[in-house]
Image (cartoon, rainbow, N blue to C red):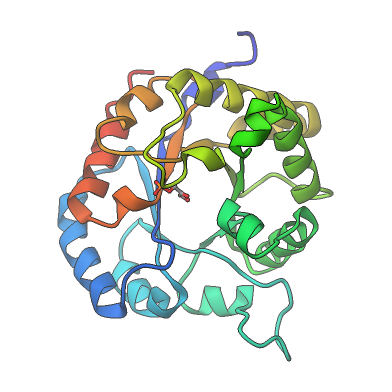
Length: 260
Ligand code: 13P
């Protein structure tokens, strides 16, 4: 495929842990303390961990001297004020975050997060020098109705409207593969990633060449290698299998062995 340029295959793999609503502060600290020695020599994979809000500051202290990025799982777009229950981008930076996950399907479906809200959140993150992992993905029904590309296009165009691509990573997370044990086949992932890359290239030109596309949905130490062998899969956003330090480290080592 002509679009799979050399530049793309040279992008460093990126493996991010999304812990969702799991782990206390103590559990977070225990994880990081045992995980850091396991990956201390890893230089050729970028790593991020997204604990829940309550653990961010303590995780931030432990990760400060490392190259592992601390990520939040959500952010609100206003800077401060009467927004009960919300957390601003400035507060995330203050806690040590350099990255934030946006538009996760659980937020889109359980909390009615719209593309418009995601767009505002990306702008707020930008202002506070936070990088972004933007999640997109179709439901099973949408896939069965052959609407996968339509859904991806609408999520991408709505979320990225009038925004520069720099500092943004895209995570393709088919909703039917999240927490279900049903991974997309490497070919299905690659097909969606190829569509996303072509779309980004059309909208953003050369800038798109620096954007990594991660796959998310039932990634495990057992399937990471075959996923990463696909030309357009540059990393993974891992839920359940990132909760255990050994299993998350194995996924990182699997990504490192990428043959491209
Ligand atoms: P699982 O790896 O548990 O399927 O979760 C994927 C996910 O939603 C990561 O953001």
